[in-house]
Length: 154
Image (cartoon, rainbow, N blue to C red; front, side, top):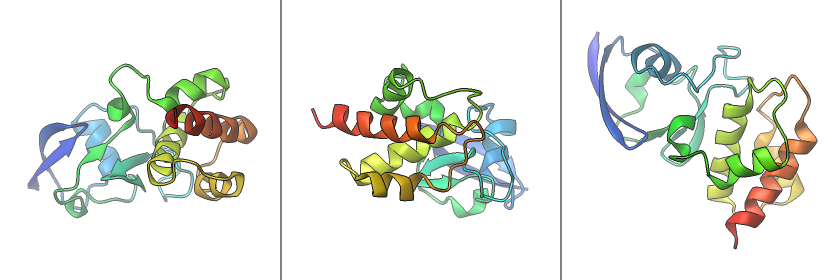
């Protein structure tokens, strides 16, 4: 066990965990931030996506020991009132069906738009490709990303 000082959603947190513990389990089991979902455990589905700095990362394989001083943002910290442009676009486009993958989808889309505020359809498809939606709402996901990009540019 080791003590790690983390900044999560703008708040200083301290955890005493095994250095190999994936951030997914630090968030869910030690900090009660359960918006980040467990999907596959092998970084292939995207349900566990968080931001490490400004980069979308799969938290299921990210050991707490590799975070260092980089800030972490989870779905709970994306916006205080759920009014991030991507979250609003998700509602407007009625993206979610079962909803399980949506936090990872939203976090990935938000990171994309931070890096590329006006992506093309191809850039959206490429960036979102690693996030699996078992319900198949990919067309609505793309429409929501485009809508969020448009809303953010005003």
